[in-house]
Length: 439
Image 1 (cartoon, rainbow, N blue to C red):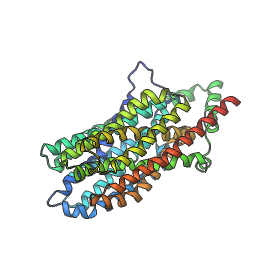
Image 2: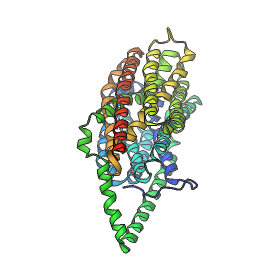
Image 3: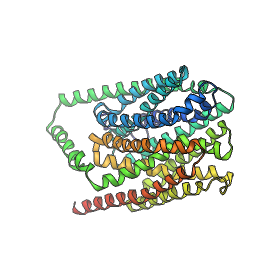
């Protein structure tokens, strides 16, 4: 597994935490790069028409590629360790970004978008694996919130950055160029972290082998047994009702990430008259609600609540997720233009915590240190599968400027998640309380 089990002291600089933050932030900024440029590429006199003909299929292809990445991540992340996976990720990022900048045809550009998506896909599971391996049970919720906020912060910064460059008159190819040195820097940092962590693990193993006291041997044997006892087997966990009560809302809420990334700028441009740069920038503002949801609601409120309070907070946020897209579905004929972006910010604030934190905690709880990456990637794989089915349908409607039915589908997914996720959390809390009573 990645990292060591020694927790950083509160007074020290936590290099692991901040490197994970930066890796996920740059990863997510790259993820929104092509969607942010989509309207500009569609307006390109050479690329626009052929790109419009294939963009729906590419969106579906992106979801399928991401699904494949999640399944591969589920199979190998825990075995390889998160840092090695992140090294591989940034190698692919550099190839995808450079290839997209130089792409001579729409086909090549599409292939680079798919490689971009594959690189993005395995990053979250790798980050969660590092959190699960390095941090203790009490530290994990705060670290999850921090890394998840990096994802949303990266999406916000990416949309704002790319939107501002477009508004300044830069062509879409030049807008992508600043990502190359950022991705190269993260490749070097993750490579350094991988080799230094490997050296620390080798030194610790050699020291333990040199002085194997009876107490050390006893602890070494007891730790895996305790981990095994505290977590159900993977197959048993997947067969449980709680697994499906968490997986289904995770899959449905996954379409929110697709909507914010691929459709919010298009909605603002087609329905409310914003130009390409303004639409991309305001899409970033809407994504900013997710940052508030994780850093404020998640890190300052959620982590301090008792289990019952967490259930109630998640239920409230999911109720907002059902109500806001329903309001947005009324369209410009009913909804005044000044209300659209604030409502989108509120929606982003509401969905971020339920999307990231309860599924991450659930994956760590049932997976332990040996299978956290497996369950985290399985949840995301379900989301990409669902998105692969939803995206072509939504894209076909959005192409004609019809967002009403798409937004109604988002309201429905919020309502269904409102039933399933809090129920799963309530059942898990009740089970944990009963175990404590017995103990």
